[in-house]
Image (cartoon, helix red, strand yellow):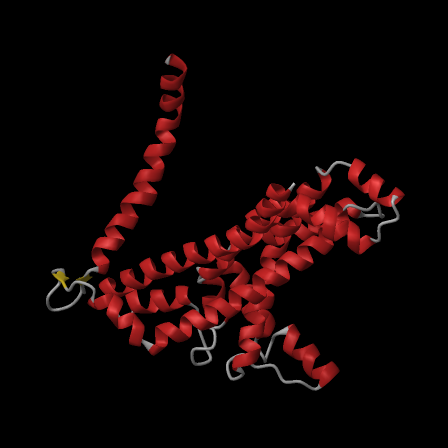
Length: 294
């Protein structure tokens, strides 16, 4: 009984911090979402309007477009990071000259602030001074201008996110690969299993929890990305890179529509939880069914 009290006492500061900076702000945003509120307008008071803010979302073309582009961005970015991160983790498992140096260089993007990443990529892609447009024009005759080409702007935001966050995926999967026992792989080698069979039936099932956790983290980050894309494209051209985080920012700050912006935030949180749950069920349920059959 005493140990339980000591445990709760030790957890109390963490619980207080989580409640203060997590639960309380969420409850406040949920409360604001049911009101019409422009604190800088002629009438700065909150006006209760029920579910009107949520009703607006269904017919808001800008919101639906932002959701669609955000889902595309998250899919291509996260999928690419997991694939590239796994390949790099397998590479770093092998002994080769300068492995420690390349590991260090590979993890450097993680220590750079997102707003700095966006600024650097903005300089790299500016047509007049950027090194990327220069070499694309010199080698392939392609004139890169993300201020006019919507497809190029979208692709560059994905590449920027991959460059920034693939090291996190690599480190996570590398730790998972290093911790794997050697006996199953030795047995598979004795049985004459191919590399693909070893990967599909041994490596992938054993590192699935690490992949699941990594995808969860990266999916939630990709769905709320703001500063990198804001610095690189500003959400343009048009609405090609106006992802949902940028859309919320523009609704809340330039338009000062706090009620509607809060409603969008609540819906985005709900959609994020739903997608993570679907992903969890898709990855874990087949494994659970296999265990029950034996």
